[in-house]
Image (cartoon, rainbow, N blue to C red; front, side, top):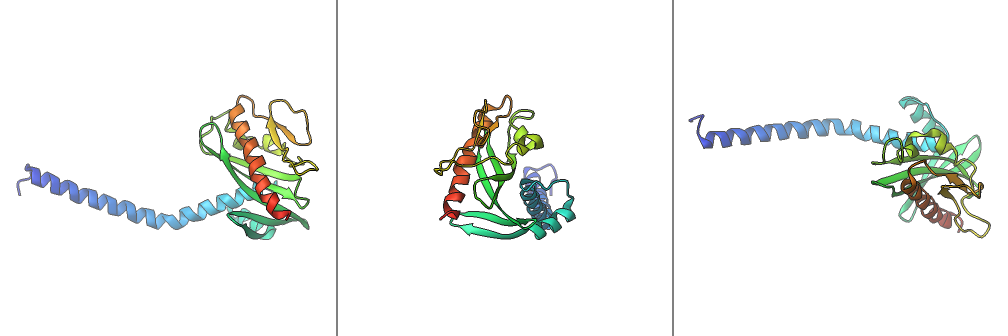
Length: 202
């Protein structure tokens, strides 16, 4: 075959593309179990973070998760985790919302009274580094949610992220320079937690 012909170039390119595609597919399938395991471990670590348990490596996190997470429960389309911390029951609720540039998420742990936040961990897809991304990067900011009440005596959701805290029982300072991201966190907490608590309190 004439190696300078169009037919040769097309055939050669096609074979090369098929081989590369096969190799990429093979590598993807070979690595997928490891990738899935890493994703599962990351979720477990985030749940532990929401329970104020941090600084564990992979094996330690797996062991601690098995020790304190007693069950994963379903409630319609929602799922949540029932945990035990030193003999006290905690509920961990996964939440999703929208920030300034994309999705945000959280795991929030709540005491057995179903109204007091025990701990929280926030994550994001594409918030601005040093601003909105602080919801994930600042452990100190996440710790401000500990002990906050979710709703008032009438069951109305009051938990909020605000520019100026006037009701410390329910409110947390917003992230400086990230008002829209903070508003997204506030909406996510109110709307998301209310769904879980309405179900569990029935």
